[in-house]
Image 1 (cartoon, rainbow, N blue to C red):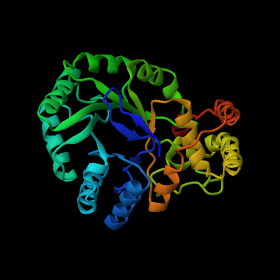
Image 2: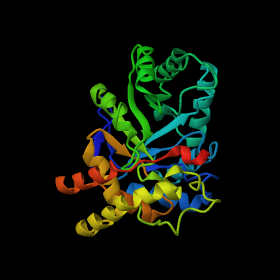
Image 3: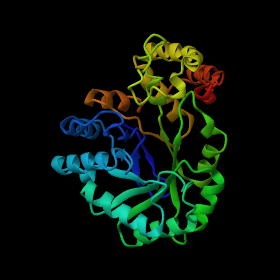
Length: 317
């Protein structure tokens, strides 16, 4: 496993982390013992960054992580990142939400506290919640501050509210076929010395090579409504999937490992956080680190993926 530095903190985090949304009703992963095995596998494979959120099972994911790390005696092996929902950003809610996360995670501090999304429905001033986070840093309850799904203009405003701390990371959707982050977000993070934490780095499995037009997620699957799995869109993705399979064979890797490696090869500030439903899947994801695509193979995927257009409005037609 290769490691990258979190912002300007000097902290080394694995370039392949573990996303933990799967420990929730949304994904049906409610078997605690399996969750513990997944987290143990992450540790064995050199993963030291685990990303969760209050909204993942409304505390269930945090509970599984906290209990697992305590039973494994592994709290010090991981940097824990969690997130406060956008509707919990009044100062008093930031404090209560943090206390709840600390209790569920069974820890005395949260390594990276992130704002999950801006308070788009509640009209809470940016400086109110950013200064609340900064106060929690000074009290030792959180170590570092990050945000998720923030546009650059709001990132500027959020950073301007901080007196002593700085935003060290921005977490957004980023994968080989959904590359909007490259337009503004990635250039911003590179200039600011921040990390880009890529959620959905495998497009929720669309790039894993496990699906085809005859085998798309069923309506009971949380992914069924994803634009990438709408047949008209998935047809556009098929050439990329076939190229991933071809390149994977060449490197003795899996399509998922190639898709993740493409992101890591593209920018040196990117951290990927794929989820995993089994210990074996953790090991597979971890195998995306420690090697690099050739420039020719990187360009081949780059060129093909730029031809893909994901029409999100198809859901409304």
